[in-house]
Image 1 (cartoon, one colour):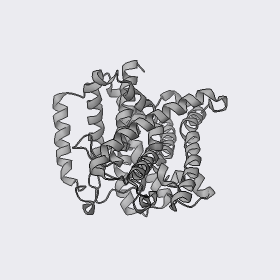
Image 2 (image 1 turned 180 degrees about the vertical axis):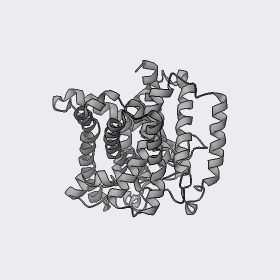
Image 3 (image 1 turned 90 degrees about the vertical axis):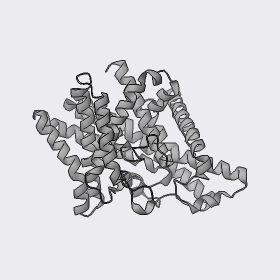
Image 4 (image 1 turned 45 degrees about the vertical axis):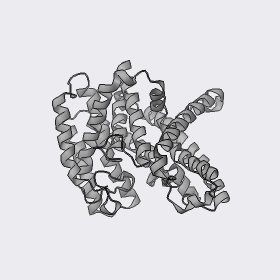
Length: 360
């Protein structure tokens, strides 16, 4: 992979995690593309871009690498947040999560990943692991298929996931299947983009930009997130397979959002490539994903302390709540991005100093 493409993917990762954090603070970086109308699909797309065909003949090595890069750190963070949750419970009387049990520590992460509220965004990590392992095995089976047939299979899986989620009861196992079907489509799109489109076709022309914006304008007709009582509209909640009344809109708005993100990186690359902090954000997406809700909690605790408000007041609101959002949303955003990014850098530095964890 050439350096320019590698840099663009890293900036794309930075954009994706920035969209996740801003989404949890309920504001939009791109106004036509509401929070959670495409961000998670973008992460799966990026994972497809990074998938290497060499692993088709080395399954054990692929799984070993994914266990090291995804699951080991996941369970280290889970242990940390188990302790943090217990401490907060002792200090404030609020236990932010499910009851402590071996099932909730080792099994729930693969079912919904919400065993601890403060680390619930990490549900994506185990979902990514399951999706990428499934993608590997499917690609092994499909390697001799015509590209059109293979594309059709992944497309059917992606579009079928939503109606199937409405037909059959969403048991824990079936919920995993629905999420994997939906996610696989975008992993495949990312892999297809790198192999067949990048460097071969220019898909960032003014004409295509106009078409995408027109499509999104039509999709906006289905948006209902102006009022919580109306539903989530273009946004969707993949972890619970919550698509409200939509059938194909979540897939379509994910595609337009991904294209717009690629276009945005394409036109801004020369301005962004030398900004060190953006590079660091892209390199620390895992740590930002894992820690941003906890950092927001700590920011709220500090604001409470300054204003003489007891921290127990925080217990009356959900995990995403922030203090006085009209005045403080962007303060939370900036502080959270900076603190979580440099927390990731610190942990990487510690890793280099402790021999026993150098193989993480």
